[in-house]
Amino acid sequence: DIHLTQSPSTLSASVGDRVTITCRASEIVNIWLAWYQQKPGKAPNLLIYKASTLKSGVPSRFSGSGSGTEFTLTISSLQPDDFAIYYCQQYNRYSYTFGQGTKLEIK
Amino acid sequence: EVQLVESGGGLVQPGGSLRLSCAASQFTFSTYWMSWVRQSPERGLEWVANIKQDGSEKHYVDSVKGRFTISRDNAKNSLYLQMDSLRGEDTGVYYCARERPHDYGANFDLWGRGTLVTVSS
Image (cartoon, rainbow over all chains, first blue to last red; front, side, top):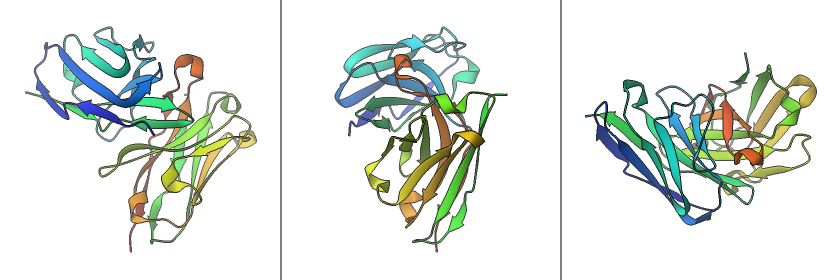
């Protein structure tokens, strides 16, 4: 199975900051890389798919990039609603795996 | 409202069994692959199993193979997970999730609120 490692595990930032979260895969991931946001007590919410395509309705301050084994999620200007946990997810050979999560907290 | 609602979680002893259900509404359930995904502080988010639209193809994570069985009833718009020989490491919140077609990159665009499974003596 492909293992996903996110960094950092915790990120402290302020409203208005630009932040980047990295997701590294143990093997090449084609385009099957997605990003989710999860808030306490809620299910994950899909933000980005195919590494860089924004899901309809997701604010444009979110963006994704990358290919191969390294991918990034960037939030261009943090808003109060963005403080949450973010996960990357891949699909390969009939199996899905998730990263361990990055907690984005208020500085 | 388009939604998934899980039920059937609870406290069970190690070695016991539990059957989870997921009721889908306001979308054409029979046209989607469906998955179960679980979450715990120890294991994070973990995909458990999925099933093809007509039930003819199923896949499982290695840790549950031979113990868990995924099934569906399209006439009832329902997804199920039969969990046998439960272990402590199976403890967690179990989510029912809708898979997007692979043209959209193989991910989950609709999740239920989850049902808590606790395996403990």
